[in-house]
Image (cartoon, rainbow, N blue to C red; front, side, top):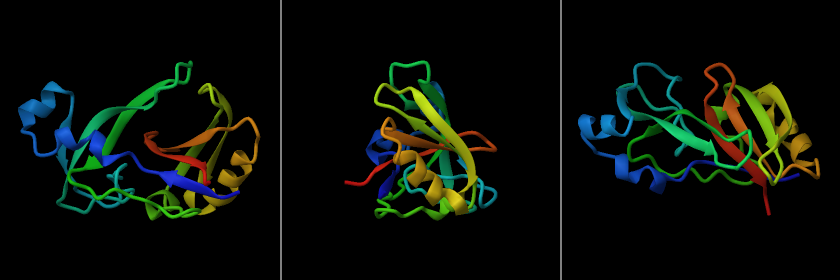
Length: 156
């Protein structure tokens, strides 16, 4: 089963880039200077930010479905990050090196299955869950910090 990992769209965060600290704070956003790698995974570029680079820490609604599984959490985005466009069946390194919670959802946004796996063993879990007929998409979360990482869909 072919799949595609989807990054968050850069356009959604463009209005925050380059803003001063007071403007960001008024929107609940913080600018941070990266002090370790890995440690600040960008949801736009699907790469870990480099030491000394700035990132924005903000609350993001990753599951907008009108179900009990609607969700928001803190994420990092690199200012002016290049949009990731992983190839079909590609697992970005930022995911491959982390412990992940994989959550399978149906069209109504209801969780129908889940698993925890090290990113180096992610491919068979994605393929198994996407093979289930009731599964519409997957969400990947970093299992230790628990933050949303990416969405996975069947490749057309």
